[in-house]
Image (cartoon, rainbow, N blue to C red; front, side, top):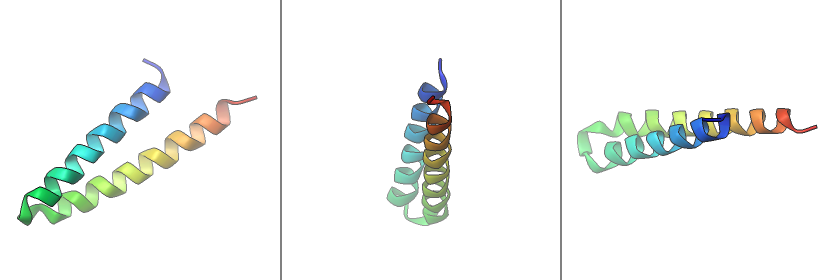
Length: 54
């Protein structure tokens, strides 16, 4: 699995965690953590993708 595949899997995982946090009323903190991790992974993947281009 290449780096893009790992980033996509992580993005999907963080999105699922965020949705679970929103659906379950007492777990708003889980949604916040999921959104932060989603954005961090998205930025990291974007930076890595830009760095591999020549």
